Amino acid sequence: MKKIVSLFLIGILSLTIIGCNGTGSSDAENSNTKTEEEQNKTTDFINDDDSYFIIIDGQKFSAGDNIIDLSDIGYNLRESEASEKVPANKFLIGAGGMRDLEDNLIFKVIPFNPTESSVMLSDAVIGGIDLDDFAKRYNDKVENLEVYGGVKLGFTEDELKEVFGEPSDISKGDNYHIYRYKSDDSNRYYQFNFDEEGRVSRIKWQNLLF
Image 1 (cartoon, one colour):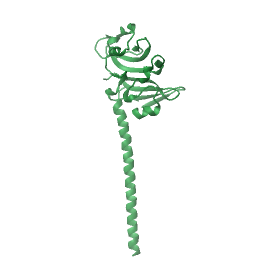
Image 2: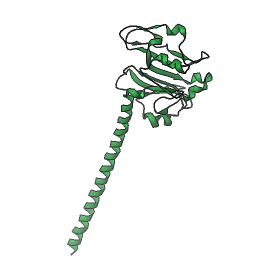
Image 3: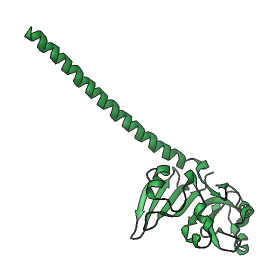
Image 4: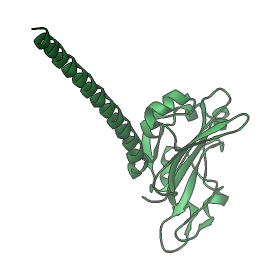
């Protein structure tokens, strides 16, 4: 009788151990699956051309839209800049300053020419956006400009990560740090600069693959 009881108890104990091990493995697998899904979600949206846009006064302007369309809501290039040439299949850095009706620089676009012949800058398309909180001193609308996920200037790191997830890489200096979110191609990315208080002070994206 003692032997039978002992064997019975050993059997119950063995089943309990197996059950615990089984549950632990399942939880670990689920945890890993969720992590992979979150990573894939971030990668998917960074590689999605539809994620590269800016919303200004309720209107959406995406990579590939005509720069001249921004004049419909009161943002224009300077005349001297509008006549500059953009070579075929090239983009310009340092040009594309969009100014309000008082001639204040509010944000920049990256002028891109996807055609086979040169065009004037005013006839180029949006290949990127560069928005800096410096412009807030001229126009308070800057605080309301949005990119993917409703992200704006002034967002905290945690608020940004809720939308964009963990960055591809981080650069840090004495008074700043930068988050970069890279796609599978170097011509398409998002970048966010943070000020000393840990809030987004600059938003930049580029997409030349649309």
